Image (cartoon, rainbow, N blue to C red):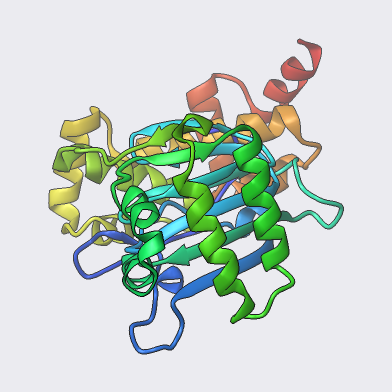
Length: 304
């Protein structure tokens, strides 16, 4: 995972099977909606962490840039991209804190819909059958390019001003557009088969990134990955060669270094922003890892 402090996310939840979930994006089986349309503006730190859901997701990034993770692929993203993600592929956007609008927000539009919407469209309108089947066959996440991107953005812009019923016609236009001309798109991620150890380590890394400012205890992280404390400590030491506390301190100190170099925050502020509870402890851990004090590190960073 990228450790640059410019990239932010928030804590995400785990379901009873210890799988990453994004419950507020899931379709409610009891409601009368066939889709969810979100037109949102959020601060970088308010963005949701890595998640997956049982719906298709079409996302247009209006304002913002950073690192995008979809399945097995991690790469940079910029404003203006449009990505289409099949169900059950883990994904997230980690936004750069410095690329926002005048209000300090990132803006995006996202459309969620289930396979049922595609099936119902093809059942009601045989003319749409071929197009819906093309979409249903997609297994990789795709990013659109060229005029196809412009066409999709134009439809999504219009949808922001439409009511729920009017958006149905626009969704049909999107289905037609997504299904056409496969040359105007590229793969940006697919399902990744990972072993249990790597999956558990990924969960630990993401939890730390998303909760670094909080007081993270061994009980917290062990519970998060479905283990007791003793088993977790043995697993982590065997998998990484270090204790979790040492790993956590090293991550926090690297984060502090980024802030010392790239921000004007006081050393005291940086201490608390990186999850340390008091200055003497922060100074002691920093000097043990970096061999210099935080103030000496900052001075040398300015000189270089």
